[in-house]
Length: 161
Image (cartoon, rainbow, N blue to C red; front, top):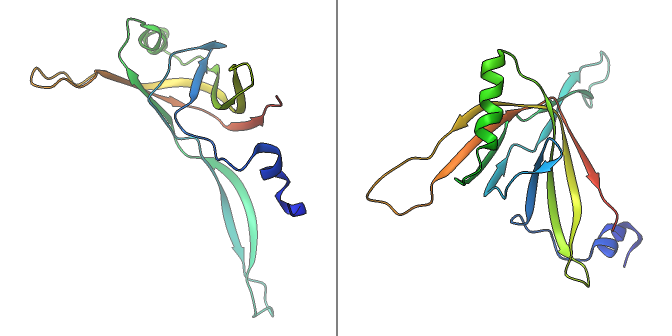
């Protein structure tokens, strides 16, 4: 394998699937969510046009911008942890940021134990929106709740196993 492909050699050629992940809130794994969106970061770019340099424009890196809120969806369960977390923030009149992580499980080891491959640590997370299920007597869809979480940044961590 060429020298530049050491990542493929170490991790194997198979890409990670999107359906094996967990969300950790306040250091506790809280349910299997069916969707997780908003794990993105973008950098501002500034153009600098230098006088006398006509063959290119200097591109300068700016601040990082995180892609808005993290949106989580899951089937309604008998757990009211998400509801209580959101309600606590309302009754206190202020948001108390917590530790949060999204953990991607890539593969199983030889003993069929789950191995964590990537973990996104979310800084200063707090709920900003909770949405309950759409109820309809003529449908047999699964009831889904959603919560949106604001944050101040992401840090991706690769875990050794």
